Length: 259
Image 1 (cartoon, helix red, strand yellow):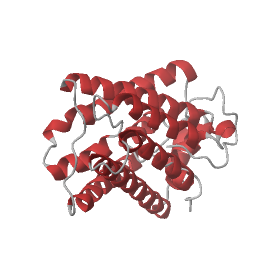
Image 2 (image 1 turned 90 degrees about the vertical axis):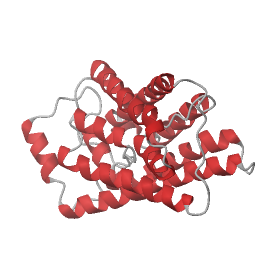
Image 3 (image 1 turned 45 degrees about the horizontal axis):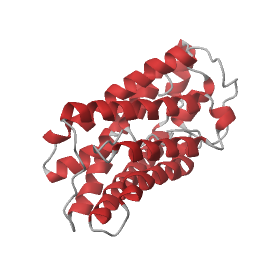
């Protein structure tokens, strides 16, 4: 999601919009070797997020873990850890909506979007298959209608993506603390919503378990809701922060994996 490494070379505040030269430079910087490294990082991060989140929920249903810790603390801590571990390699998106938002902002090359999505969704399926091999995949709590669940997931994702894009925009100044900000937002969103709905804010994390358990048709609120929320957050970011700046581009793509 965010690269907590070195900041951009230009001011992180009040940035300019991406020019044709900027876009070309960003595209050319993604060598095949760098993309492979980033895809490995995204696959690992999304696998761990899905495996830990579903596994924690399973333990909670067995009475081995408090429900609040399973639904909120575990995914928040995983996201925090992955930002610091993988942010400089891939940007630590580990979420297709984050990838889409960065691409629409011009911070991330469009030719890398489909490969990122492929490994994010694929890693989620692998995590679900692994858990499903020794236990029944647990159902999330749903106490509201499907339309309400979609709107709730959209709202939670809006909050998350506003934080992701804002901290990316100011990455040069906030880089030591971006993981804490994003991880805390993930945990807070889950804590406030998971008692009434299986809000995920991440279509990839939902897709694998839903596919493996044969409940894909039921999962549409949590596949569609985050996309809608991401678009709302994108519009909010344009309205409040304006166009792309250098820090945002670096946060979206990482830098250590170049070459």
